[in-house]
Length: 317
Length: 316
Image (cartoon, rainbow over all chains, first blue to last red; front, side, top):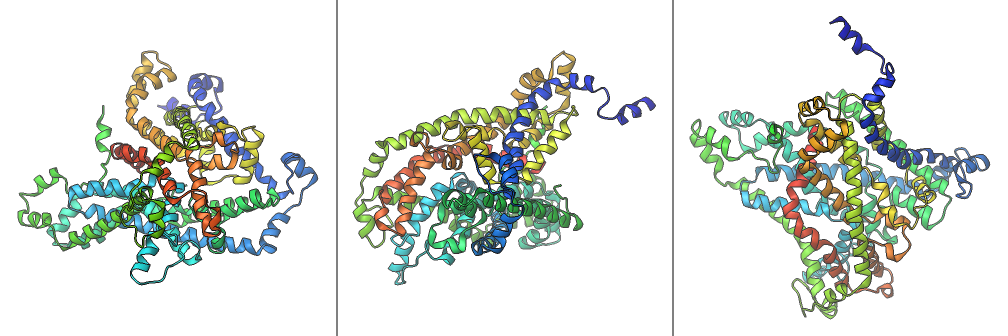
């Protein structure tokens, strides 16, 4: 018994040769992963040093740091001398936050609807149909939206047919913003509901039986049993989604937007892309915006995780 | 041995499945009868879901109608709710369009090569991470988890790819996707849920870790491999981002990129009508060219996808 405790307390570095020999096959299996993460995730993290330079690709990061180190100048440019950036940041927060709330609610509502549906055949068909759009790329969905909501498209045709005036959905910023939220629900609500449905299936049927005996209505059962039952999952998914607040969906917006709506829907990622590759602003600036985004996203996850733990929920970190 | 599988949850909420009903029936017969009747609430739920389903289907229907109507009908009819002046010309031009087939070829390379490559690295990593203590495991795990919450951003990534010589190289659409952290954790959770006794008994028989993995664990995890493989396959079929950033030669453009160019030509006609080089009908026909394979397979493969998200999220 005593010797067992001693073995457990050993430092991980003791008998390192023996340990390495024992786990040599597992280590061989993990080497590609270490190389992969090092190259494709950690080298770009080292690359954020570009944010503190005027970057010249010919000199590389180290050369640029030596000859063109500018300190926090890139950050001061975007925050003080770039009115567009602040607008973009505002858009990003608005779209990102709106999407988190809307997709959170729509997924839960969808799950409740499907869960309470009694017609089993329709349920199967409906589930297959509502989960399918998740597997379409935004390229395809942008194609759909461009013909649906164009001035010559069917939606405007219907409006005109009913005697209304045609609406410029694709070029009016406010309508476009609504389109972004709607298309996000269209694509993801069904798919995101699956996880809640699985959680609901795991709620003990005895709770519902007890509620039946007490004479609870279906809405009461939903409110007092189903919703509390999915709460831990919901909180977990909410924390995870907060990390993506500042991402706000590059794929979607990049495929859908056009210069006429930049004012309302340009977000950090699309702004970085256009600045660096279209307007050919120095890459240092784009890196600075990216670094700002990464740091804030990371802090958001940490803070929200803390709050969730304080409220007695299971966190993720 | 397969007991763990029965615990996995099905697709729909199975609160009203057959077995609990049989148990409950003798207890409170009246209540149960009441519960199975279709009431007002059911009608409301049905109507809401039905409208949502219609909203999902409508864009597909609209695209199909446009693709088989003539361009003349598209511009001149007040309300194109059903096909008018039906013509299959758009589909004929898609099927004879060499750019489309080139894109299809590139996408097939990504689909086969990319999926195999990603599956291999993701699965071996997931297996290694699922085993009990080994030297350096915690370090590697933390190294991986950090990348889920922090990254360098687009610009450093761009210069990294360029300096690796992957610019305008077809491999740029495959190599950077070697391991997907979410799918890796999915595999890890699955391997960890298989009984440890399998490993112990194989070890007594003298097998090493690689033999145990290939001969014992891999054959048991075929359903999960199918799930992860399908996720990768869909990702490769839909991939356009890396090719947009790094591919300039038109020969290396995957299907989605070819499609993207066509779509932006009709969407840019919002500003300048002269920029339009493809008709709406042709673009819609091309969209169907890219999504029909998925529409055909999806109903049969749905259960694999569902299993993936359920196992990954509930156990992770």
